[in-house]
Image (tube, rainbow, N blue to C red; front, side, top):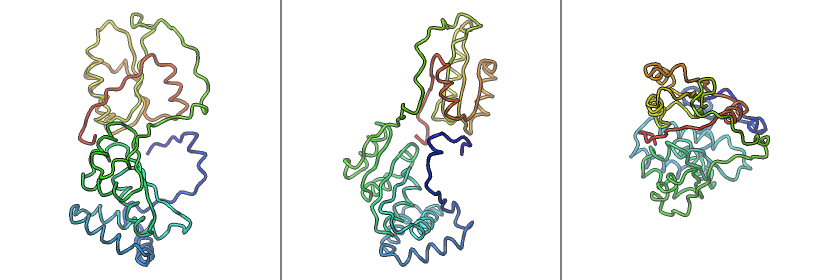
Length: 274
């Protein structure tokens, strides 16, 4: 959804094919996919899996994922030997149905709200079907392993960066910014989506509770549905002159913001989606 593209993404040369988000938007493509998929060896098994899932999740979304799986299985090049899905909710549903149709192994990664909002029965059955699953937090791994018949299938792989892609960081500096000089305020940086679980409402409340004589400025980088509400809250707390809302930024600008900051702040909290 962000318009900025990181340099590493520009190196991806593989062709990109998008499944129809809504089946009604590309009915002939969906029909062709289904006509091809129904002739595959695993189609009947995939249909049985859908029926079992639909008995517990009677939603149009469930049927939509099966239709997308038909398109994926029908259009997939024959040399493909494995399917991988990022996110354990709907992307993994599509991958699972398509893998069954094609009689292929599949694997997945679980990232965020998919871990906490997907029904327990669905997580357990998906883990039973796939070869391996990775997630990026210890809390996520604990939850997924607790729902898996074979916890060994779930591994923890933290997010990381290839530091060789970045210039050497500057030498440690001491700019003397301690919050006492209005001309040299402490530079706070926060990077994250403006959503409930990032805790920005709590962060603003905490900043408003700081001593009035303490000099600081906050820079926020990231988009999100709550941006307007957070700006309104900041204004109500009298903080609007101390905060810069930059929205989504390219990686190069983000690195520069990190280097200019004195402190990184984030007030993550538990929300309904994790």
